[in-house]
Each structure stands twice: as C-alpha cells, then as structure tokens.
Length: 384
Image (cartoon, rainbow, N blue to C red; front, side):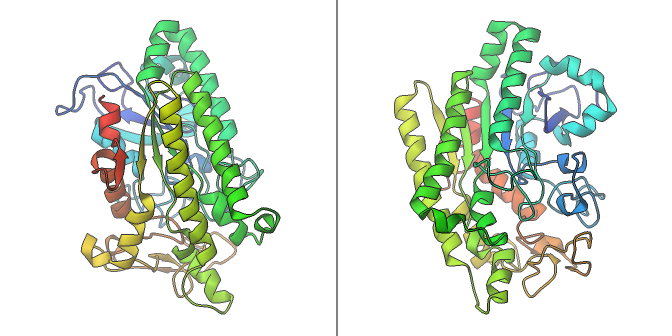
C-alpha cells in the first residue's frame, strides 16, 4: 500500500471507505487546493466494508464474479469493477478507493495519521436489495449501519480532527469539504422486497416526508459542524430495475412496479424543494443534485445511444431479467447466469450498475451541465 503523506489532495480515513493516493504527486491538471470529500450512503459507494462486518454471505460481495473486470478479484463492491467514488477520486487526484475496515485490520497505525487524509466514506453497505442503509433508521434495521449512525461516526471524526489539527485547521477543512450523499433508494425498495406493511400505515406523502425529514436533519447537523457544500444523488426509477421487474413477473404482471417509481419521483421533487429551502435559510449553503433518475431511465430505455446493448436485463443473476439476487451463487439461489460481455450492460446485478455505467454517472456528477447536475456540479463545488 502506498505511503500516506500530505499533498495537494489528501485523504481522510475513518469508518468505511477511503481514497488512498497512488503516488506522492497530485493530479497535474487540477488546481492546487486542499479539500476533503466526505461520503455518506449505500452500496453505490461501499468499497467492501460488507466483508468485515458480522453478517452472512447474503450481505457480502467478496466473491466472483464481483470485481471481475477492473480489479480481477472481488473487492466487496457491488459491481463488476469500480464505483462512483472511485471515478470521482480519479477526477480529483490519482487515488484508489479501499475499504477502511480492511485498512484498519492491516495497519492500525494509520488511525494515528488521520489528519493526513481527507476523503471519508461513512457508509456501511450490503447489497441494495438484500439489506441497505436508508434515510430511516427502520429501513433494514439490524442489518446495516443507518444514516444517523453514520452521522455519529462523522461527529467522532470531527472531534478527532480538532484534537490532531487544532480547532482552526479542522474548522477550515470541514468548511472547504464537499459532502457527497447517496441515500433513499432502500427506503422505497424495502417495502416491496420484504412485503412490508409500512406503505399501508402511511400515505406516500407521509412516508416521503419521513425520509426527507431524516435526511434534512443529518444535513443540518453536518452544517453545524462546518459543512457548507453538499452533493446528492436523487433516486432512480426504482420500479423498473431488474429485481422489481422480476417481482412484478412473479405477481403475474409485466413491466415495472409503478408505485415504487411514483415514490421515487415524489422523493426527488421533495428533495429538490428542501435543498432550495436550505440554500435560502443557511448562510453559505451550496449544493449539487445529480439527476440519477433521468440518467438511468435514458440508458435503460435507449442503451445503444450511450454505448450499451442491454438496459433492462442484468448481466448477472437468474430469472428472465436476471433480477433474482443469485449472482455468484452464494445466496439461497445457487444457480445464476453471467453475460459474456459486461460492458454491454447497464446493470451488473439485480440492482447495481456496471463499472461502465458507474463511470458515466460519475462523469456527470463531476462535470455535468445544469440539466443533469445542478445548480453546481461536483467539480465546481470542490474547487470553489
């Protein structure tokens, strides 16, 4: 593993995933500015913490064919290769995303050098469809570390930074940092995957208000600690991902589960509204929201336009859409199919995109125009 040292873009380690510099030189084409990227969320960002938590193989991705393309071995990422933060990190500097829990097991001395790092990932992710953190504590309770617990970890890091750096330097780091958040999908998928009655107890509007409300509380708490720049992904067309189409088929229907897609749309409207309200009320608050819904929907419906051949069937899994969660044969379903050319597919497994799709998403998050990422893109926030 490369040595850890101060440079133009540092890396911060604490509790889930980190970006480690691959060399002592910063990216030659980026402005010389110190900045941090704190990452909260779900399996779109988890670099392999699921390997190290006390769980079963149903919640892990440390087996073939996960990681088959870029890494040539399974890393715990829910993909054939890299994830969004891997590509974002490459845009910032030459870094490689590794699991923090792996690092802590290999070298506890690294924690004494927490001040020399800056990218932190506060998520604990399993596979999205098997048990993932949501904005609500109740979502997949007991299987994952929820968003409020992630916030607690962040506060622990904030205290440690103040101890190591001093109040002024820590305050400056937190103030200049970007806080990237991917959360919410599991809150809307879980009721359908686990036959929950939660949507019978609450109206759609009430349920979405709960999800957005909890996320808003977390954002405000980060703001109190000095955070000013936030990057968020909205929720994709959940009712049409392979696992949901498989469920619809098992129910005797065809197509998407429209209720889930409607929840996603309403969530995205509410999220956009609350971010605008926060911008107007909180001094210095800036945000970027990436239109993950449109991004994914366009590639599902018109894959050839974006260099894919298949947008609705997963590369790995079983069932007509390969939407059953059997990729790798480690779950209760042992048999699965694997495509011959993963780069032709938008989805790798029943929910998660491929390395190639993640790369396209990350590029739009980083430098996309206002119609897909706005009012700022992540690059504008990072080097503001």
